[in-house]
Image (cartoon, rainbow, N blue to C red):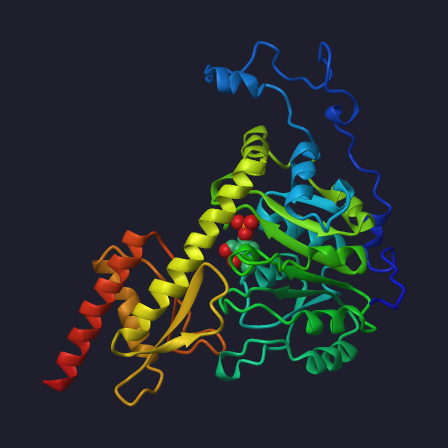
Amino acid sequence: MPTKSFDLEAIVRPNIWGLDPYRCARDDYSDGILLDANENSYGPVSLTSPEQSRLQLHRYPDPLGRPVKERLLKLRPGVKSIDQIFLGVGSDEVIDLLVRVLCNPGIDEILITPPTYGMYKVVAAINDIGVVKVPLDVENGRFQLQTDQILDTLKEHPNVKIIWLCSPGNPTATRLKQEDVEKILNSSFKGIVVVDEAYIDFSSSKEDLSLAPLINSYPNLMVMQTLSKSFGLAGIRLGVGFADSQLISVLNKAKAPYNLSSLALDAALNALSDKSIQTMKATTAHLVRQRDEYLVPELLKLPLIGGIVGQSEANFVLARFVDKDNKPNDALAHKIYLEMAENRGLVVRYRGTELGCDACLRITVGTEDENKQLLKTLRTLLEAEIANENK
Ligand SMILES: Cc1ncc(COP(=O)(O)O)c(C=O)c1O
């Protein structure tokens, strides 16, 4: 349970804390004869279907996406109010905005735990923010936080404003231990801890393992999720941040006035109906069975695949390629990756340069047909490799 006090004002950039935000027309009124926002009352030039008319695309969208947030409360019952929810153009916008409101360019830093999602450090670089790295414990694919090392490092870097944790991790596919996350939340660290749960539904098929309910206890926590993965809606670009309402109001103040399009909000509303949430859960459970009962066991039967690294709690797995003596063979992993992408129309991700992922390819769990095709191609290439070596 949290014991420490938390001062948001002390960590938000002063220019943002004192910002008088732009007040857009739809913040004030959205009904009646609307002649307040310089929209075109004659309607869209090119869209005519009844569906598109319903969306009133000539009008600016709801600036805060309130109906979508109401539905998110049903998905994550531990979150109590729509004031604890921020909606972004994908989680990538949430990442960017958090850095921009909290970190002073050229002065502040973020802390990441490699191997991890690449955008945290890219956003930091774009905003001239330093990056402090405390690697995960990668021994035997454990991929867990080294909390004592993180806490020691924070003492040497008092300007760290954000700690980015990814759970389940990309590319580790491994969920972080809640007790480790809480140890950091309860430490003397004064900034924000972000837990990026883009893949949480793939590890929660039996019970809801999201840390989102912890935002009620920890004002220094943000939990990020997205409709890009389990909901299958990467194209609409909708990411979610759950946090204490005070932090959410700072993000709302600094975001673009109408960051989410009417089309994205409508698609999200449909995706979060009771029926669609049931479909998401069923599809996710099916994908998890494909992963655990077919793809992983069949990958392990292939020659020159030494093992699956990490816990496979996401919609992808990390497969390690080895030589005849069972030693990681990074050259082979890279060769197979290139051959599949260039000549076999089968694209996976080479992750061999990431810490603890030596000789690994990251493979997304596809449909049954796609998985079958992948395994067949891998078998052909790996058997040819062995035949070549035996020549
Ligand atoms: C860990 C993690 N966070 C965030 C994202 C980005 O998600 P979005 O599509 O919501 O921007 C990804 C995308 O691959 C991811 O792997």
